[in-house]
Length: 135
Ligand SMILES: [Zn+2]
Ligand SMILES: [Zn+2]
Image 1: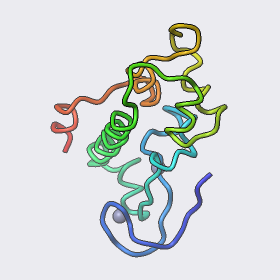
Image 2 (image 1 turned 90 degrees about the vertical axis):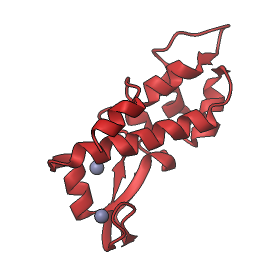
Image 3 (image 1 turned 135 degrees about the vertical axis):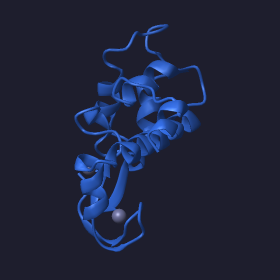
Image 4 (image 1 turned 180 degrees about the horizontal axis):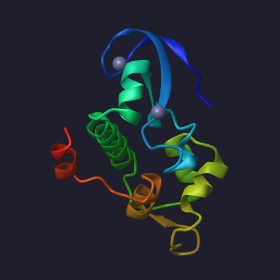
């Protein structure tokens, strides 16, 4: 698990104590808890705002859309094996397996790109219009 550190908040650029935040919450997709691209370091104020603030939802959706765009950038084929997902997302095999285990298999051991993305996103795809509304 990532740890707190001192540095510059990736959202407001204030220097200070930072805590790791999971763009896709652990409650949404636990298999991404160690995925570097899913973690952002935030100051206490930004982190509090995401989870409890009145304007937190917009930032939360923005970060989730960032992660979804990342998945779309790295998954450049129609079908993937568990091993390929492990390598591309830089996660453990057992976490890659967790993402695909409920997905429909194709040709024996392949999983469909859009199924992988949806599952990694915790079951929901974010649309551009959704992210605009909540900016
Ligand atoms: Zn901040
Ligand atoms: Zn958090």
